[in-house]
Length: 287
Image 1 (cartoon, rainbow, N blue to C red):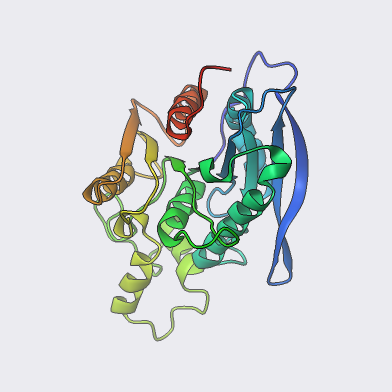
Image 2 (image 1 turned 135 degrees about the vertical axis):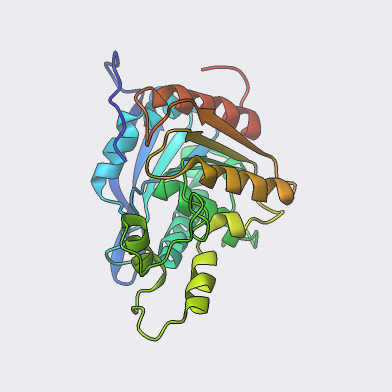
């Protein structure tokens, strides 16, 4: 996902700490960048951003999010932003990446006093594959004890894939030849497809399809999606919205007319997302 650059900004409203190791998994150090609001502008809230596009979490994904205004908009509001890189499909499955997002959330909660944020008021943000992983995390993570709790107070997802068995009206398969289908092999079938039945494939795809996993305990959701998205059909957000509403989870879908994947004015919707998260986490006033 490549987002448009901001214009008119001079000094960024944050300080950035790069490549902070938040966990060691499989002998690999997992990294995040930390964006601290400039001055005394902290509002006591934190935002965990899942930096992933095409289920890859190279440093370029941080730059994409920065170009779209994510860090600027939220840091201006006083949020501490933690951009978690959950690993890439070249090495990790979807289940691995979800665990890595959970690790990142737990790390942030363990450091909450250091950043003067409320660990029970964390937001979670993701776009495209990052939105997919963020959604899955909220449905697979249950509140436990304070040390292992990786739940969040609210989730914002932009144009997420949510249902691989009904992807714009067709069922995908890791045996297919389109790009998304090919990625499914790495997400769900790390050991290959030899001897795997169609029934087993469907079961594995359900396990990584957020629209089929929604739970009543999920946090409030804001979904934002363009109606001209050539990569992830709008139907994917509509399906997740329907699943959340069926569980009576507070959820809202904002549709961007003529919006692609993404769109040139996406910063406007990032501001909408910040307004919504302010309301959901109890931030008072504008900053």
